[in-house]
Length: 253
Image (tube, rainbow, N blue to C red; front, side, top):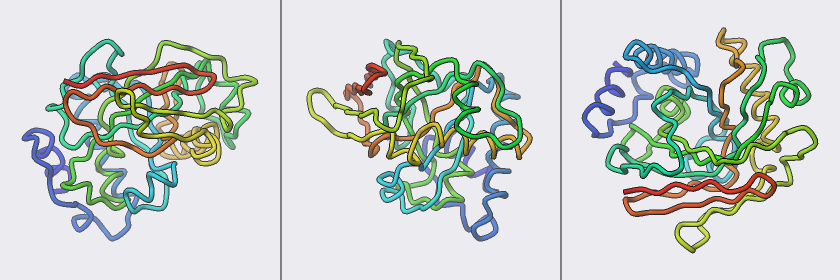
């Protein structure tokens, strides 16, 4: 029933009520099972898995949504849009945007005890990214079970052009400023993402491995928000600058 409600919300463009009452109270494993079933549905329809995302890593975002732990979702081929493609805001239900560091993996992360050193060694490069998050739950009235089942509230994502080697780059001290037009609407740093985006990817890699779906070479990992997420409406233009990584932008129509 939970999966059916989420599928209907996507198909009709009408958000559904929270689904946490349809699953055992606080059962994260059951929520991830719903997420996995949705991914299987999308792959059966022709999509391919291109990576993963870590969500709810930033205390400001956790406070915005009333949750207290990170989660993760799956990135599919249709979610990735180039910077120069105007995004049709009407295709999204309740979009919000946040700036992140994207990790482009050059090697698998499937060994036991994955830590920061293993993440750095497996990363071919990092890039500035914008994630357009979306919720199929009406009014963003979500708990941890709702957002996990809803693929960690994934929507779309955009990568900047820069590809920066991670080795020697301390992401904790990289600052981020995101503007809508000329106005600053979000700011933060790498330290706001579980203390370090590298730690966020290590957290994800260990959980993904334990679930039998390890991170693979060629995948993109969105490591989590560097600052508060911001609502999106048609006509908005966003640009985020991440110190040492460059700029990434998105425009909505």
